[in-house]
Length: 379
View 1 (tube, rainbow, N blue to C red):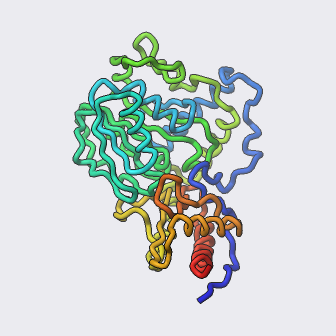
View 2: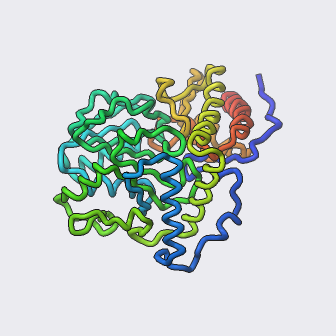
View 3: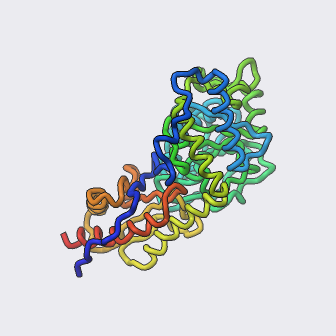
């Protein structure tokens, strides 16, 4: 039976998983206070960078004795910086359940050539974190952006561990609880949950991570952009806003807007609530249909930010082509942009549900998904 084209469209059709939608109140005028054409080392630039660090700490509840630095090259740069400067002191447990985690495995095993044990789960699954040896260093993603699978909590990580935990938290920060007593390194990028601009990453270090940096020198050469110590001591200025290379003050201004927007809503609890409501709308939609379901097998590990879906209708003979056609039809109608599954992930859709997305837009988009599915099945 044909489904009529829905009458209502999302006010904002942007559901990309990165860069993600800007906050609903964002305008170009929000960037007018950016100190463009000025040195980032001038007093005004330093103050902006320090404010970004302070607001990040406040909203995420980062302990006072943890260091927060703004570093180049987005979350990738931040996590690479952590691996290249801290790993190698002891064996490593590498954990992956999606493509970005798999990339970190490749870096450690093939590039750094560190003694490592790899724990790999299929897309939609998650590694049993209780099986790891926490006397070793452990590298993992908190939220699998390309698989829609997240850590349900940090209970499996012992507080008395001997190794460091390095956590790629880029799709979790500002939308999920991060247990700071279980994390020694956490990284994320501005363009995910808060909808900031790309190219800058955040590096958060526990006192144990700082101790590792100051007591261990890796055997490989480090490019300048990765160096966090000088003369065996942490370069403290990096964690006060004195960045390693020149930051975009336009992007910094944009990040400050997102932080102030998040704080005005009520901080982390409000941001989590918005992401939860968005994801729940999609979960309810899937539960009422027999042709689509969540890629995450266990409901306890379903992401509330990068919600990944797979088509299950037996009439579909080419899943990749079908999913691509559905995504294109929705984009052509300007009701859902950039929602195809990640290129390395199973065929399907990936709908961003982070805090900058309005639940009303999710709810307006879902009938269009019904329509697009029906049109492609009938094609």
